[in-house]
Length: 174
Image 1 (tube, one colour):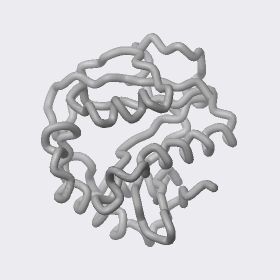
Image 2 (cartoon, rainbow, N blue to C red; image 1 turned 45 degrees about the vertical axis):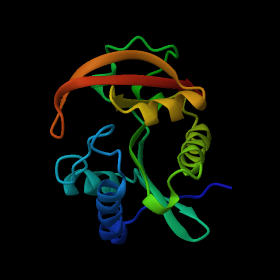
Image 3 (tube, one colour; image 1 turned 90 degrees about the vertical axis):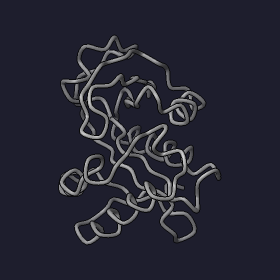
Image 4 (tube, rainbow, N blue to C red; image 1 turned 90 degrees about the horizontal axis):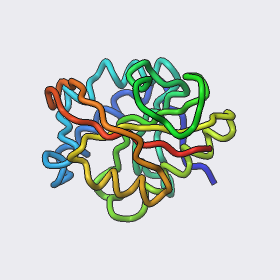
């Protein structure tokens, strides 16, 4: 069963509150993902994903367990990477700002969310799923690798919450 629910405009405050809660109550956030609300993610980012139909809520037994943005096209930033799957931009899904609610962390929700996202990508005939994570985000890397994602390269990018830093890029063929 797919527990991913596409967010609507009326979900904005719920999503914003979810990210703030995740950032404030995840002890390792500053060490690994280094999210800071207002820098990453931002109100504008969340609104853009909602408006584009790319923001999803992950529900578990009727409760909000996580939030994620899924785009069904990759951006130019991903072009320099040597990917294993040959695909056009619109044949690639990309996972963004995956967050697990603090009360659901450590219960396999991240794995379920990603599996649900992959299922959605397969229904849309995507050829690959890709994502990037800070090189310091070891928990995310471990989670994705456990699901079969393969490290495909490193890029040095600027982000408001980190400045210039290394991002690791991963891929899973669908």
